[in-house]
Structures are given as C-alpha cells and as structure tokens.
Amino acid sequence: MTSPLPRPESLKAIVFDLDGTLYRDDRLGEEVSQSAIRYVASLRQVGMAEAEAMLLRARSKSGDGGTLSRAVVALGGNLPEMHRRFALDIHPEELLKKDERVPKLLKLLATRFQLYLYTNNNRDLSGRIMAQLGVTGLFRDIFTIEDYWLPKPDPKLITDILTKIDAKPAEALFVGDRYEVDLSVPKSIGCPVFETKTVEELLTLERLAH
Image 1: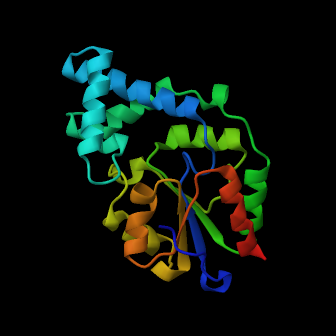
Image 2: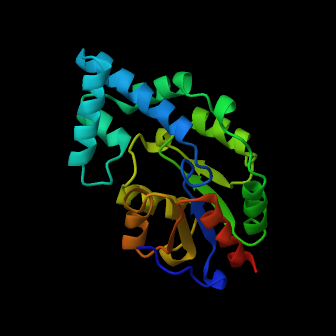
C-alpha cells in the first residue's frame, strides 16, 4: 500500500509517527491497553473482562483503522481524561531501551530535511518516550493529541500541519506503522508515505540522505 519513496530533492519535510514507528515494544502497548480498559470499566461500571470486550467491539466497528482513542470516545469516554490516566499508568522509563541506530538515522535525515513528529499520544508521555529513545530535540515541532484533541486519522489536521510546517503535500513524507491510521489520509491529499513495521524497515530511510 505504501508508495515508493520520493526523490529526495522533491522533499522538504518528514513527519514521523511515534509509537510503533520509532520503536516497537509490546509491553508498553499492553500498559496502554490496560489503562484504557480500566478507564472503560470505571466509566461503564463493568469488570475488566467486559470492558476489554466492549473496547474490542468498538474498535472492530470503526472504519478508521480501529484506533483506541476513537473506541474510548464511542464508549462515552473523553480524550483528556484518558490521557491523564495514560500519563500516570504508563512507564516508558522501565520498559524502553535506546536503539542508537534511531537517533543516528534522525540526525542524518535532519541534515537534509525538516523533521516533525505527529502522534496520537499526549505531550507528557511522548516526551518521556522520546527521552528514552534518545531523540529529544531532533524534531522542529511536535504535534500531539493535545494540540487538537482529535485523534488520527483526520484530513483537517493533516492540512493544518502542512500549513504550520509550510510544506506542500508533495514536499512532506509521512512515516508510520499503521496505514489506515497514519498514512491513508496524507496519501489521499497528495503526500508521499512510508509504512514501517520494524526498526530495520525504518532504517532504510537512510537512503534519502544520500
């Protein structure tokens, strides 16, 4: 589904997703899931098993890639409260290990392109994750769920980000691990996209800098 990489000379900016893209760690994902399940359980006054089933059903009914954010909202939750809980419940400091290849890649790409981050995560948790990955300070700007309180995918947000980074669609490469969530909307408006499921796939972006 991902288009071939564009010619480097046609690019101005690269917009990265964070979770699942700059790192992969199922344990952190499980902490996120458990926090969301506890929130739904408290909202709906049900047990954890039933709350988990409700979230799975809500995600399966979604036509937008089944994001956790939209499923929680569909069940009556609100994003600020969910992310307040995430900031308390999730511990990247205890789980994530720095992969030196990732900051090295970003530093290389930054010699030629403007780098940005666009994540469904909150600013506090994103900052702690970036610190663990060793990528703090490598992005010109960071767009989080707190900037809009609207989760991916959303065409208006992509258009707004392009305006803020002063890039035409064809000049901004979007990089993410979930096509429907991270990449389908940018691609639909003319942005090149790159889908990556592993750090090894991510590292192939190095060729853009040469």
